[in-house]
Each structure stands twice: as C-alpha cells, then as structure tokens.
Length: 239
Ligand code: URA
Image 1 (cartoon, rainbow, N blue to C red):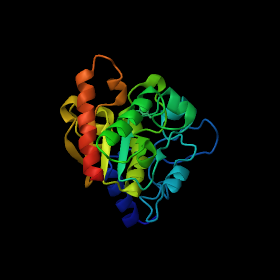
Image 2: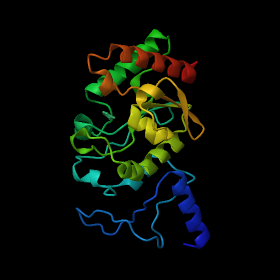
Image 3: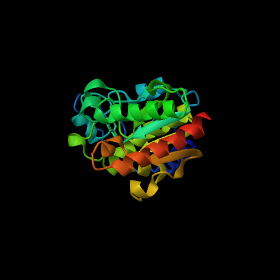
C-alpha cells in the first residue's frame, strides 16, 4: 500500500472518529484481534464504490474485532427494506435479538413496531415495519444489556457508517441517547436532544426515546413525546 493511499485511509477513519485500527491476525477460533501498527494491507476497504448490505455483512464475517463477540450468540446486522428512506438506529441487541438474529424483536421491538405502524396509520401514511430499515450501533449483544463501551461503538461504527451510506435514507431516527451520541456526537442526554433535528453527515436525524425506556409505566409524558417525534419524522419522510 503506498503512502498516499494509506494517508487517505487514515483520514477517512479519523473522520469516522476511529482512533484504533485492527488487523485480522489469525483465523483460529477464540482469537481476539489485537491493535497493530499499520502495515500492508491492514484495513478493510473505505467504502467500496459498489458497496452493498451483503458486502458489509460479508466483511463483518465472524467478527471478533471487539470483546462483545465473546458473549454473543450471533451477529444482529439489520432488518427491513434496504431502499428505505427511513432508518431506525438502536443501541445494541438484547437477549431476544441475540437469540433470533433480528433487531428489535423483543418487548421493546414490539413497542417500536406498534409505534411505527400505529402512528403511520393515524397519520394516513401507508407504512409497515418491513418498509423501514432497522439496525443498531453495535451488532453484538453487550453482556447483561449494558451500554456499549466507546471502543466497541468505534469498532462497530464503521459498519453502521457503511450501512447508512449504502441505504442513504432521507432521515434517520436515533432511538435513545447512545444512538444519538454515536450518530451525531452530541453529548447531552436524550431528554435534551429528543424532538430536535440533528445531522449524520448531511442526513437529518430525529432523536427520540428508546422504546425500552417507554416501557416503564411511569413514563406517560415520554410516550406522548415519542409519538410526537415519530409523527414529525414520518411526515418529513413520507409527505
Ligand atoms: N434494544 C436495542 O437498542 N436494539 C435492539 O435491537 C433491541 C433492543
């Protein structure tokens, strides 16, 4: 790899906020990838010009780039319409998602489905869950559903970046504070950020509450706010 090409890779990864690079060192089971000095050719392609969700999935492979692989059953890549003008991004798979390999299929996922479909119906927008695309910041379940660590989000972020670049939606919905931070870099809590239009690159991002938060019974006003956020988002995308 020549120096110019290497420099362009490094600038690209810096733009993504990635500060540690990993190289596949051995194909043996149980091998964790170690950060290494950059030498030829340690990096995956930046974003291949003909990138596709299938290609990204293939590049993720049997990923062991961070410690989250240790406790996962399977990688939870994403689900839905890859040409959707709307992408929902959550935090990371929970137990049900880890078991089924599909994002947002547990209780929080069922609430998300209801929120999407009921709001759309009420607003006269013909939309089902399968019409949108749904994925997470990290693709492997964090142990005990803990919040993903910054280095885990950084490593997995390159794949979310490529998913979003490939789908190129009209808008993105960040579900909860972790997704909002990962996508927009804003550090404020979700109560401050919700209902606002932020940006991922040039794409508008609407931040709203994570459905798991809304499942807690005492959050009636948060539920109302989340429905308001979704209403604005759906009208922006589908009107
Ligand atoms: N919570 C998330 O953030 N993502 C899922 O896929 C499920 C629950």
